[in-house]
Image (tube, rainbow, N blue to C red; front, side):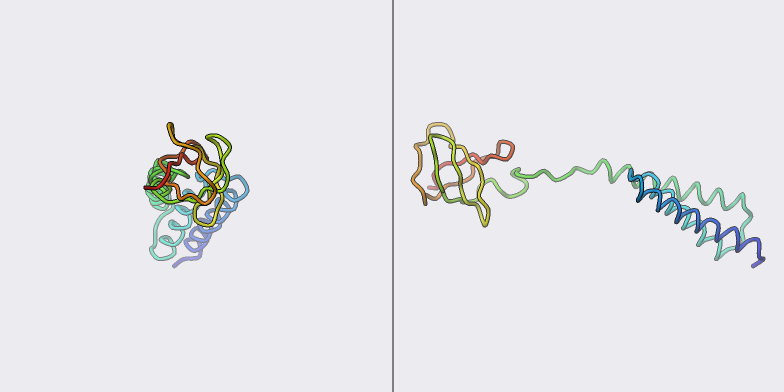
Length: 145
């Protein structure tokens, strides 16, 4: 491999590292994909004898693949806390204290704010309750039957 080819490959590797550092300093997930594309281009340039124009083409392909992957990951549904999907609904909690419909329950190893479902009498402390739903961070509960 001629000296100019290895300098070109090392330049791609350095550019990739610079882009990754920029991503750390100003996160936005965009520079990361370009940095990884530049590093991949540098590695390919180290392995294969390519003209600089071909290297730019390889970089463009890797960058396009990286950006497509990044956009797909960004569109992936994000898990939401306290939803039926998270496994809170249907679990059993224990009443700690209630004042009217509002109160606190213990679910697992945590205390939660809770609200009684409509038409449910105020439970005594220690009563087993079932989580019917979630309203923000407040559990909607009713007696476990």
